Picture 1 (tube, rainbow, N blue to C red):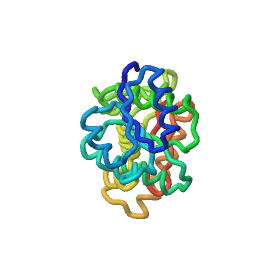
Picture 2: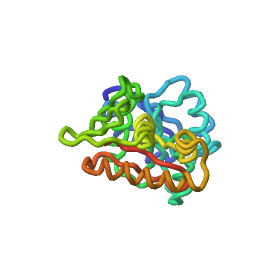
Picture 3: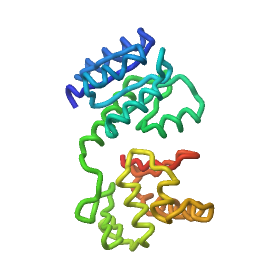
Picture 4: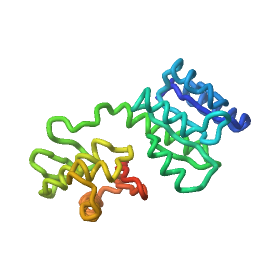
Length: 229
């Protein structure tokens, strides 16, 4: 991942210097800004491969910046850094299109691993299932045949199970909101359908459980994030 461009926004100068130098020592090209109001100009000028945004910033916070970034670029990965511990902040960050979230203080090693993972996911190209099949962890998923196999056993899926797995896979490593899943698969987000969705999520989790690198994370009050390793 040498010379990937990182937009790093942090107003604590001492911390910022440490993080910037650590990233540069790993071969990242770092554009750093301390003032929230100046970030979008830098974003447009540098077109970064990934954004690492502190939430608490002077003049404009990290969430507002992420919102503006998403209007220009839906794909660039965004990691939020924050000292706050409220879970509603996590939910807000994900709902604005954030891909990951780290609480301060954090280890540089962990930040670098998360940056590398997001860049790897980004370069893996088109997320749509092409040719009606996809490799999901150790499984082969055939959308047209509605089957999920691990090389030994083949499981026949129902239409809704198939479509739910497709939605999760095509939106992997992003938040997919419950209401979007319900409207796409059931046509409305009624309470009854919402309970149905819980059952289907449980089924899909059980089908995938033999591959520990696959995880459907519940983002409480928002939706799901399908992590594929």
